[in-house]
Image (cartoon, rainbow, N blue to C red; front, side, top):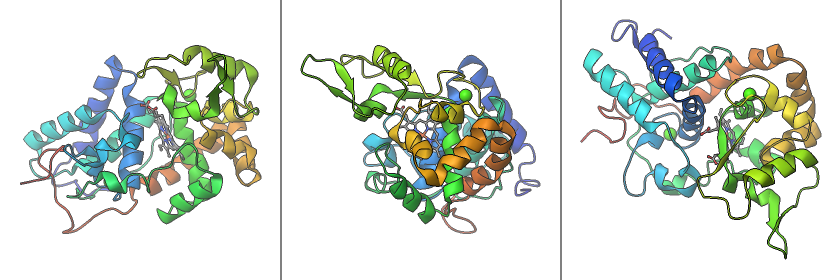
Length: 297
Ligand code: HEM
Ligand SMILES: [Ca+2]
Ligand SMILES: [Ca+2]
């Protein structure tokens, strides 16, 4: 926790101020940073591999197409290279920024250990097998999370991240089909009717590719337990959200979190910390990148 105490004592404050400053003009940033960390940690561990640009990198895989927030991490790095050159890894910056994003939107604060090294490998071909798809069964999600040291409890808790942010229409189009009249029809009858009507309205058949809807329409920009209330009310956006309430292995925890925001917040810190240390590189592994979007030459 005090990894940079001597080498860059103000790093936490600097990252926090930067995230706060950009978020005050762009309220969509916190969600982007939180998702960016998730996608980083699942592939090659929390090593900043997702931040690398170029042909064939993780970013070029379709599953990462809608990731955003890169430029904020890059500019925080530029600032830190002036204040503490060659010291703070991009992987650590991203972990701190995601932690701050949650706190800044009203969520719990969490302790994030530092000392991650940046990876030198980023390959699109590693993305598909390590990123959860919205069509996954609960068993598939459990399996993937377990392989990263994350439990069923962690899966339910971390999915609460969908209390903020947005999703493109294509991200949940598998829940609808186009009928013979060219209209959208719900495949999965378990969703709340009004919610479905709302989604169809926002995402018509001819919706623009860039159209998005709120993950949590009730409190889009607030990190609260509304996500779990939505699940209980049959208003989960993705199939992978809804299944957390429909499957009896996870229903009770969803109900608990829906009833108690303290319960959710109380669990968040531990699960989030576990996410931020997935397969980390330490010691002499990897490197401290000078720029977050490219490995050192
Ligand atoms: C467990 C299975 C999960 C699945 C299948 C999933 C899938 C998705 C999808 C498809 C989107 C919409 C992306 C878009 O269309 O732009 C999304 C958004 C998001 N996800 Fe997840 N996710 C999962 C878990 C998580 C976890 C564990 C976190 C973080 C701890 C997370 C954080 C987010 C955030 C913050 C957004 C909003 C992003 C934004 O506003 O740009 N998700 N997720
Ligand atoms: Ca990574
Ligand atoms: Ca919310």
